[in-house]
Image (cartoon, rainbow, N blue to C red):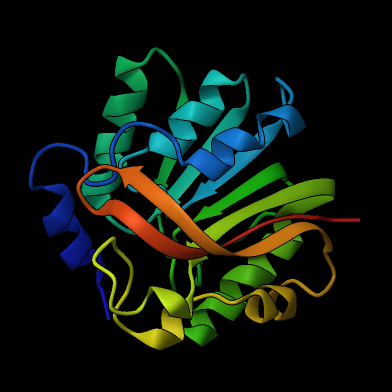
Length: 201
């Protein structure tokens, strides 16, 4: 299983491991966003998704367990002329605020099942009424592909896992299938993913 030290090492290698452009699916949800919303970007690493959300006029908090990633996210935001509140922490053990966010982006944050359940409970707590969860992660069909993703099958997502993790949220869209990734050196090529937008009633 990956550790924060392993991610520190990856992010120390120079360049941006997943590029500087926000996740394509997150960008596709721009129509759902409004300036002034509060947003949380989970597992945001070097800050690509948080910076993009800030550029849309949202008040953004990012969370990642890599101190190196968080430092790079702060520098990236400053270089792009936006402000983000980049925090180091483990989503499974974070002190989640109550009803604090209009949007939570859970993009390629893959956790062991128990940690995933704790983080999902935190998301449900932290979403405001009407708030949106935007999620993308690798599915079991990704196994064996070179376009990225964890090697441990228990870390992968399915539609059923999404539905079980967020039973109180309304599913606006939830798909499972192939996409072509172009996200820095670590996410390149045809990939099998789960994508979804869920809303807190």
